[in-house]
Length: 597
Image (cartoon, rainbow, N blue to C red; front, side):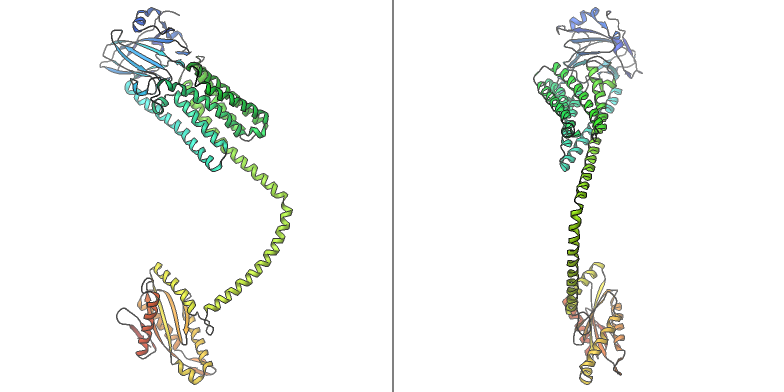
C-alpha cells in the first residue's frame, strides 16, 4: 500500500454529518502493542491511506490499529463534533487530540466499566471542539479481542444526540418485543404446561442477552460494572441460545416421535453446542468469539436443514419454522461474514442479527400457536374416532339409561305433583280456597322487601264481616259457609293479580296490596272492597246482605315492621267497629282517617 495520502476533512457551520470518514483516514498496524503516541507521530510516513481498503473492518486480529485524520474548521464560531464508531463491541478505543505534548485523551470501549468511559453512550464516541479556522490532528488507537470494526462517522454534536435518541427508541422497541414475547409464552407455559413454550422463553432470554451485548445496551444498562468480564457474555449467551434453540426444535417439531433418527442427531448437536458454551468460560476471548460465530452459523444451518426435512415429512409447523430460521440464518451469516472482514460493514450488516432475529422470534411465536392449534385439532380428531368406536356400546347403555330415566322422571313428576298438592293444601284455607296464615307469613316479608326496593307503599287491609254471627245463628252454618265462600270470591275478583287475599279464620279476611301511591289510594282500594262486599248475596233463593269493617295500615317496607303493621290494621278495624261499623279506616301516626259507606 502507498504511504499516507489522506486529505484533510474541511467542516463548516453547514456540515451536519460526515457519514464516512474513511477517505480522510490513514492507518497503521501495531502488532506488538509497543508504540506510543510519540512513536506514532514520528512514523507518519508509515501510515497507509484507508481509502484504498474496501472498509475499516480488520476482522479478528490481535493487532492494535492506529488511525490518523485531520479536521479543518472554516466555521465562524467554535463548533462541537462527535466522532462515532458504530460497532459497540470494541474492547478499548482511545482518541488523542492535540499532539504529544499533553493533549486531550479520551477513552472508550466495552471493557471499561460504563462509569469510567469519558462519554456515556453505548457506542465508542468522542467529543472534539474546533475553534474558527482551527486545524486539528486526531489519533485514534483501537484494539479488540472481537472483530475490529471501525465504522467512523463525524457528527455535529446536536444532530448526533437527536439521531441517538431515535436509535435508542428503535432498540427499546426491539427489546420490548422480545420481552413481550417471552412473557406471553411464559404465561402460555404456566397455563398449558407445554415444554415448547418454556424452551422458547429460554431461547428468547439467552438470545436477547447476546444481542444486548452486541449493541452495547448490556454494558450500559444491565452489567455496567463488569468491564472486561462482560466480554464473555456475548459468546456465552449466543452459544447457549444455540443449544437451547436445538432443544426447542426437538420439542417444537416433535422429532422424538416423528423422526427418531433426526432427533438423535439433534440431541448430539445440542450436546456439542452445550460443550462449546461451557468452553467459552475458559478459553481466551478471541477464540471464544470465533467459536461463537462458528456455532451460530452451524446451528442455524443444521436447524434450517432439519426444518426442510420436517416439511418434506409433513410435520405440523415445519413450514413456518423453516422461514423463521431462514431469517435468522441470513442475519447471522451477514454478521459473521462482516466479523471476519469478508463483506463491508454498514447499517444492514451491523444490525443484521437484530433484524433477522426480530422476524424469527415473531414467526416462531406464531409457529408455536399454529402448532398448538394443529395438535389440538389432531387430538380432537383422535377423540372423535375413539368415541365412534365405542358408539354401539354407548347406544345400548343409553337405551337402558333412557328407560330407567323415563321411569325415574315419571316417579319424580308424580312426587313433585303430590308435593305441590300438599304444599298448596298447606297454604290454602280449606273452605274458601284463599291463602291461610302460613301463606300470609310467607308472602308478607317478600312483599315488604319488594316495597323497600321499589320505594313504594304496601297496604295491609284487614276485613271483618259485620253481622255474620246472626246469619249463622238464624240461617245455619251451611248458609254461613256459603256466605264466606261468596265473600272470598268477591275479594279475589276485586284484588289485583299481585295482591294476596287470605282468610285469618272465622269471618276475618286480609288483603296485602303492593304498589300503593299514597293514603288516598289505599282508602280508595279499601272502599272498592267494601262496595263489592255490600252487594246482596243470592243463596238458595234467599237474599243475604253483609257489611264489613275495614282497617288499613301502610308501610314503606322498612317501618313499621310486620307485627306492628298487623296490629295497626287491627286497631283501625276496631276503631271502625266502635264508630258504627261498615266503613274503612286508615291508621295513621296521629288520628285514623276513614270513610263511611
